Length: 140
Length: 140
DNA sequence: GACGCTATCGCCACAAGTTGCGATAGGCTC
DNA sequence: GAGCCTATCGCAACTTGTGGCGATAGCGTC
Ligand SMILES: [Mn+2]
Ligand SMILES: [Mn+2]
Ligand SMILES: [Zn+2]
Ligand SMILES: [Zn+2]
Image 1 (cartoon, rainbow over the protein chains, first blue to last red):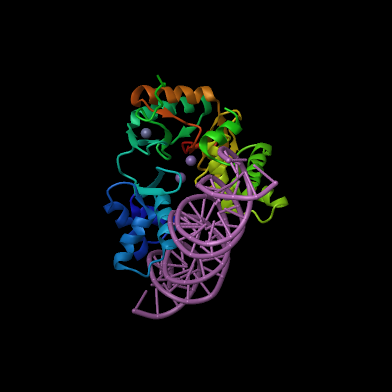
Image 2: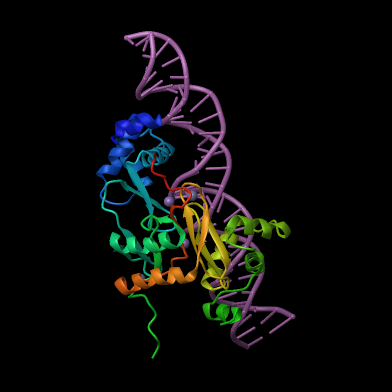
């Protein structure tokens, strides 16, 4: 379904603000924060409010154009919906991030589907834990 | 290690405020919010600030007395460290929560350990997805 | 029990979003 | 192209926490 069709069928409208937010997400490299998008949008249109950026990110997610994920506790990150999917492991000691291939996530999701009939999105929130380097070595 | 020992070895102190926050978490049934703890603490000691509650929850987590988890995007929840561990599945359509037995989490964590040497805590953040009831049925 | 070091406190400002409200402006109809 | 309906806008207040600062009070030592 095209963006036009999605707008039409959901009763949503395409405004200049929405266009600017969508372009900003599309042009970004990876996982951008709303703050970074707002900054980019305001570079040329300083009157656009932060709440407009937040509301448009939500609307664009409902339209299937962007997706949000969580790499840490506080900050939500956004990326275009057609980007390569992958999960994240985040170490609670050093903060280091590791990417997880979709195939590993899929096999974990299969177990939840078999046991609970639940269709899990394991890429939505980063998985926290302790990485190899930070694991405590037995004291000698 | 006892609470006394933990306090001693970390240089932390036991204040009336810290005691009240700890008791409030211990007396709560499940996953309480910081707001609920603050309310309970302020019932008898109204002068205690919200920031004191937040800082004490962090300190008590460092002491190993309480643990925080995330059941949704916005609110952090707290519980006593010695409570029965389990994961959560949260449906992004209906918001329903399902508990996951630790053994299922352990087998998922094993894969991440084998492939990445990462010691995952899969109970820290709820796993979002779509539950059995909310899955789209093929239109006839 | 008094003394001193400093962790913790209450207070305030700030950060990242969310929400209610009256004003504005998409987009469908004619 | 004008008119109408209402989605969306800018603004401001509110929510859930975080962080700096001077004042207070644990707790180890004497
Ligand atoms: Mn967390
Ligand atoms: Mn989310
Ligand atoms: Zn690490
Ligand atoms: Zn559901």
